[in-house]
Image 1 (cartoon, helix red, strand yellow):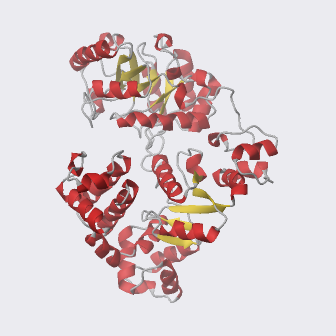
Image 2 (cartoon, helix red, strand yellow; image 1 turned 60 degrees about the vertical axis):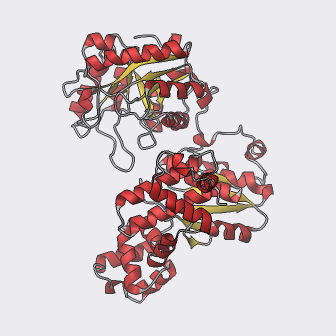
Length: 532
């Protein structure tokens, strides 16, 4: 029977082809969610299908159950096979990698009767691209240029969480190690690589090409996914595995600074041979990184100070978040739901904050000595005041202040709003200070130098937000804050019990800035999280 990973990969491909064929977008999203669910389920999903119990998994409805049953019983989905014949996934993947819409290359494939990049190259050389409706000289020139460009994903087209998951799946399928930018926890990964120990590179290449994630080879050792993401295969003899892993992890500037590298079977052996201490991948960006003795690590965290619940836009109750945090080994969490001014999601007013206190007290009584802190993610109003009365804010254990609306405001206006709010005596931490959404919204115009000065003056910490679409502050800004003497908080900004795991992205972002454990507030016991 197919494994969960195999089922999930097929569902992902089915979702992608549904999207490319202009099917109902809700169907495509449903199958993507189902793929994520199946991939992360501990139980054997094939066995659940055969037992008629797969709909016990939340999110699996009758339609998806039918497709899973077809896949488990026959080894394929008939509709998927039809879509594979109609849509050239290789062409679409190539186009997406170079920033073209999927529809463009579906039309090119159909009009010219071609299915591969090699055939596309021939068509371009023969001047046939302009035979396709909508392909004029400028589009033809862009396609010709793309055919000459190296393989790289579209800028901002892949989140770190997605890149790490993709590399891990491919590495697991080949018995290899994920490398490239994701191994260094780069916030906007561009180079994805997998190092595979083997004495037979040709055999490794064949297995690589056969993986469900790889829909085409655009170079002998570069595969591309249906979303247009290239992944590099690095075969390595076992005696040089460590050497090739160091090289494939990068960065190129860092690796160049320690070349030539000796042959070695593992990374510690490489570093011993060149007379250097083993360096965590996150710090391999520049030739001479700063390395603290007590670099922060995930297992150093005592709690999470930015978690949402069903009181605003979270999907888990206070108790469910608390129990999940307790299972992670935490001593405390802060429930920081939104206030009303955020607008786009439900928020709490003063009365709701007081009512939420009753639920938090009940959970604390049941889970002691674990502690749920009464917190809030309080919006900053246009005039720099906070979105709750002072007496309500003063009664809380932890106050995150956040700017959601007005991210495009001019630098002076934005900075005045934020720094005024930071001076409120209840404020403890500034959430996602630059407001960026990776791939969708750039950093705002906030004057970070002034903001850091205000943080030092007021004792307000700056957040490293672990949502993969934020990772805000970015490593360079974290480094600036630490150098100035400002403490940081690594937070998950979780909106579900599972979302607590996002904190690993915050911690590794902080590690890229060489953050010492002592400068991360939530590595401290609850008794040391004193009020300002």
